Amino acid sequence: MEMKQIHSGRLRAAGYDRRTRTLRVEFDDGTVLDHAGVGDEVWRRLAGSASAWSYYRDNIEEEFSARRASATTTRPSENPLDALFRKD
Image (cartoon, rainbow, N blue to C red; front, side, top):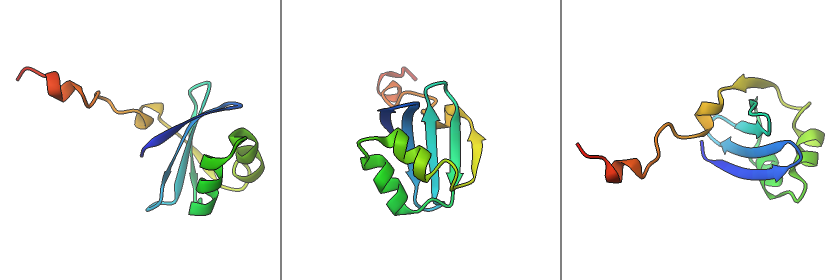
């Protein structure tokens, strides 16, 4: 899932998977939550909000179930440029 950097309140990044309707949010303390059942419009509003932290707290945090996810799933395990410089 591609993550969009967001620096608003405690939010640091967010991403959305349309196929599974899953919103992933990463907080400044490294916590990552996946919210289930989130629609496209909610994602668009969060991603485009001038105050993403307030939008998240008011419209997502209590409205959609969440489960803790691994922070490593938000970042690639290998830099894509490594393949260019790898000596096989």
